[in-house]
Image 1 (cartoon, one colour):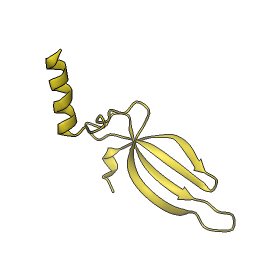
Image 2: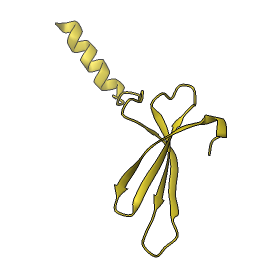
Image 3: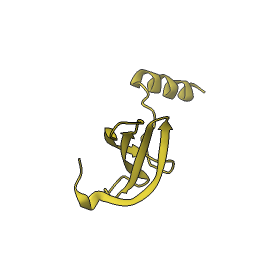
Length: 84
């Protein structure tokens, strides 16, 4: 899902729930500090491991966009501040 040169050092794995572990690698993509390439793997007794999903996920220090606020709400807030 990404070129080899965008995959950085391995990070500690995360046990999401029983039977599912996410292995993580720092991303080297510009603009994504603190994000990780994450591969979730199912490992059930008596079965071969199976990849559930692979994705780019934010870590605790990742820069992420703020929650979206509808324009009408932002306009109402600005108008309330101007009225003060």
